[in-house]
Length: 337
Image (cartoon, rainbow, N blue to C red; front, side, top):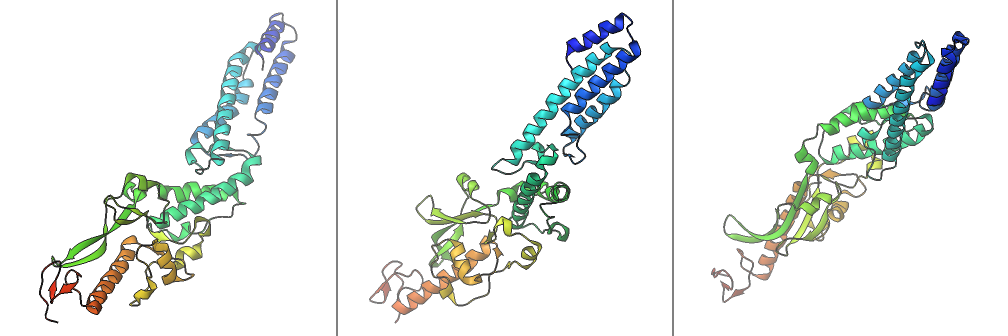
């Protein structure tokens, strides 16, 4: 309501011109202004998500009550000032809500405030997608997901999926330890000594690098170590599940152990992305395996392959170097062959 309108009504009041009617006109004008400004957000279907928005809703509702208690038109001045301030705050929260719904990085719950009726379908869709991703995070970080959290409500049920996300899913995410949220790992192929005597190549744990924090969860990658070694790194468990595939059935039926095998021909190339090898081992099944279990298998393959080669070629059993006159050309051990 414009201040000059309030002052005009007060001027008429001061000359004692039909005061009762003037007072009612003043109240109706202010209430009409309030209802017009908040016609969208005061729709019964609007969802007020955050505590900040709920406090604003209380202030909006109190405005009408305050209007009905005035005794002079000039009393609307303070109410009008509060009305302008509250309107600005409501619009700011609506802008934040729209921005987080469109954010490429996903919906930030702290920026979700007021969801008007027109935004309900879009919000349900975005929260539904975000819930899948958060469930995926829990799985790949090795969290044991409670049965009641495995079922995501339908995207069309905006209030239900939002309540599921806020009350059920996010508390689990918030309780994940920071060390698990990082969850980086790296292995490098190096020559090591077994029992201080046997020289052989193995994948051994390496210090994760800061740049590897950007690696997507569940998807390993290959690279080069600091000294030129072949390097495989990732974050969390290794999986062929994608977030939008997450369902209760997938969560409960996913294979979490690498199949026992003595046929190392299934591991055709140790220096490759683990997902290529796991595809040969699991076929079309969905899997979720720990990186240390994968490298245990790969290291067994390396040991078996190397010792088979040493026996087949008559090389030194300890270091694998060629023999000359039954003596190892590298470590000097003598062999009676």
